[in-house]
Length: 127
Image (cartoon, rainbow, N blue to C red):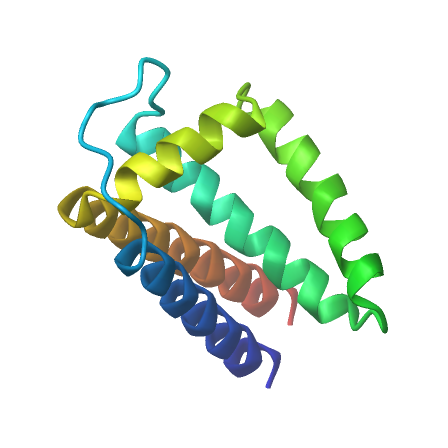
């Protein structure tokens, strides 16, 4: 039951990300501090997991959800040793290059599927 809900949220998040990509103005020049495709895929994997965690908390107010997400986001950026500006600049760049963003989101989907499979395998061992 929870797995189906998680997948529903995952697809909603991926669709939302794709819509943002489609509606963003193009930026042709590569920024100096551009995050690499592999690292960007890892970061976006963690971003979507953080968004999912916050949505599952069922917080009553949007402000509380935003605070919880910002806390997770801050620790995520520390983990990957990047700042918010670098992340946003890279996201905007990749958003204006659909072929790169497609590669990134394929990797994000693969990463999330691996995490789901690992969790299911762990649960099966515990049963």
